[in-house]
Length: 337
Length: 271
Image (cartoon, helix red, strand yellow):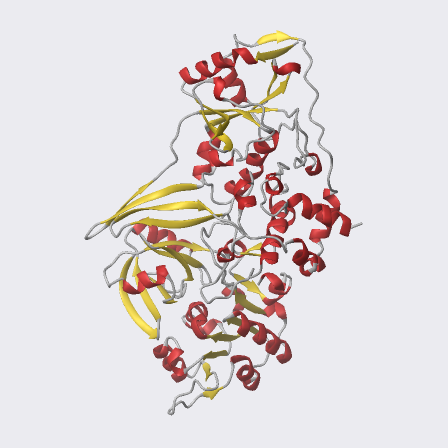
């Protein structure tokens, strides 16, 4: 017997969590974009999406975040550190690729200097993931050795029942168990089977790709020029990526008061690495695309023993010129045959 | 940090002497700073810039930094007066392992605005001169005016325990210039310092480093005895913002100091 959360009881759960002080966040349609946002009622949640346009990264690593406020006085400078707005949250309806994306970035934000902005939000957020019963042509979790029901990074895993009636509940962490205690009486016992998982076709041979990338001879391969010819350097792929973590630090303000901010940045931009002298180590778009692929599948795993990609496919899905990790690794798979 | 001294080294190049405001911060600096490390210097409202600490590890009562005015932050730093406050984050990165240089001859090769990081090592060694063998410094700039630390160059020129070879690029000499004319790698080959028991420290623009490495190889230097610093664009200095890497190597954490042997393993197309 497994516990089941029926869809028609979800609004009760949202109410319970809200009264317990949790902010309830889930997949929603806002204007022309699907994203994760705070909701008041279960009816606002959209579970029909394969994957929202934006990932849950935004909830842990916002596009722009104040780090400190300063006031310049005559004899001194007052500074106030801006810690992230705290408060417990529950993300209801993350996807396995997004949830694992957050776990992938934990070692990056945690090694050496511990990024308190990231970890305060991580520690205060319960991630309730819904396994995928639908996929589109861009989904590629299986190519990354993950699955439509991978539990990495999730506190609770929900497996949909046939006919959108509800979800089978699997509690994975103490944080998840704690949040589900508040709705314990709403859950029901049942032996209903889960709906079949989405079938996600394997698109490339990851091991072969990694071996090709690790071969120093391929750093200067003509392949990089050919594959990135179309890239317009718009950075959509990096911004929508759940694991891309590069940032810039900028001041914004007037002469006497202002804010130092941490903003998303992207390896797609020429300015990202440009020296003051004008010298640019990655002066071409192909060098920049090579950096993105190498970082995700060679450098990052070299440091943290995990690929910096969870297979969500947003980079290909949203690319204005039809490039992306899938296409690149498919081509590399062919090269390494 | 409070600006307690300023000096214009060359057109557009300024040195600032900074004192800590918080004794606790100063203690941390004294405990952690070693020559070769860098910091992020900032002006609120303008941002932060990365440069080396140009003062040596043997003088930790203050920080000196030398920079060329070129962008928003460095312009704000140039406009700052004595007594003004600026920010410093650091020291970050690794260092020149100078205790491993004890008993050895030292060759410093530097070009233009890259003398500041070299100078930190030079003074760190000269302040304990007895621990090292022969000290040779080869330094060049585009023109006579572009040479930085002119007073210290004079001082090194006068010292009997330092061999200083000064040069300016062809066309950069003034009528009363009595030193060499020629590019640093060429002048280095003419000076022909012996590679025996010698450590070379080279800092300069990428093009100078490239040709100086070739010259040192010709002179018989082993790549593992040649040290350099890589100066990539950085934002965090903490191994997270993702831009300073050369191949898999993060310059902010694993550098900025590398041996030529380490650099030769990095993908040249990322330098």
